[in-house]
Picture 1: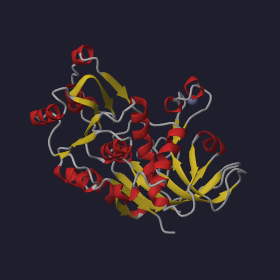
Picture 2: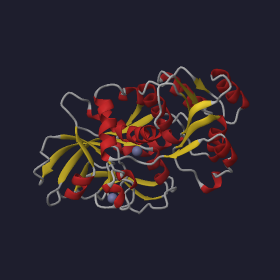
Picture 3: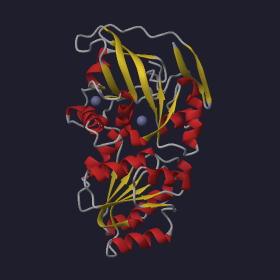
Picture 4: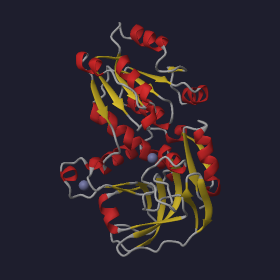
Length: 348
Ligand SMILES: [Zn+2]
Ligand SMILES: [Zn+2]
């Protein structure tokens, strides 16, 4: 089969590799589409400490079962597959917090389990049992479902934070994650969503997604603070979501939040981007800071149901399509901020 194999930083090769066999009690899936994620780009660029080479990335998968040795999964069924595989046994799993599983494994994140940037992917029965495998119903465009993976992380964050209708939500960053945060905040019925983005090209893309309040400026710009204060009777934002990997933006998020407000840090930052956070503001303004990482299989199902019901319009977010052989171009375009979500689409 053809696969995009990563041999090292920036060393991606489109080549023939052996087609995986269907494991005992497992399934073999023919890939229909696989989303390109910011984390894939980070791995491609050499920014993932855990990466193993050679490896096949790709963890936002839609595929069709072409061979099955598992009674619960049938040939011809189309599946939406997300990478999180919890162990089902640790304290976190037993308490319903599978996204913090002590023994978490990930499909297609270059840590060893091959992913969806290949024509075929195989899955073992323990993956099927503790992972995120959901049937795509007839009549749904399978390609749309790849957005559910990123949306799951976003939904996990917003569910944990308890964003409510009265909230003015400020999202810093208009990448895939930032736009999805904006969209899901809208679905949750919040009063207003403001998107802040420095890169004019990305800001323009966000406007095309239908966001009315996109501000092309830095989160440190005093003008932004002035606008937020004006909109909120000088209180500050109810919720600020930091959806960009920049330490300064995290510091700004604290500053822009009202007393008793909420801040979400979404997305890791590099050591050299780390900055000093005003913990006195957290202390005196009684701000709550939320972390957010991955999602449980249940939240993945919820996110997928938003896509299947059409509440989350996947077509609006999938703004670029590539053949597998052009994945490198996909990474370059993503790096240049030319897309909201890019997807590798396979020949049927
Ligand atoms: Zn992803
Ligand atoms: Zn576990």
